[in-house]
Length: 39
Image 1 (cartoon, rainbow, N blue to C red):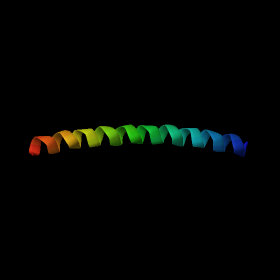
Image 2 (image 1 turned 180 degrees about the vertical axis):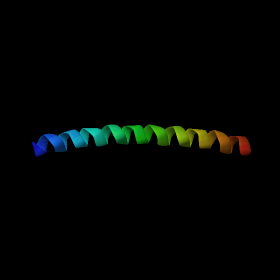
Image 3 (image 1 turned 135 degrees about the vertical axis):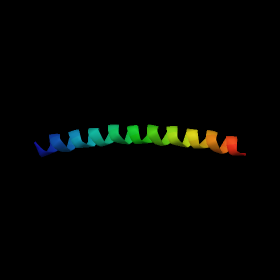
């Protein structure tokens, strides 16, 4: 049972990490746009 919970937790963390990566990518893109306008 613990193994299944561990696997589910790992899967959730992986999805969460992908979401974080996407958010970080979007934020860095918008920061690039802002700094490009400021130049």
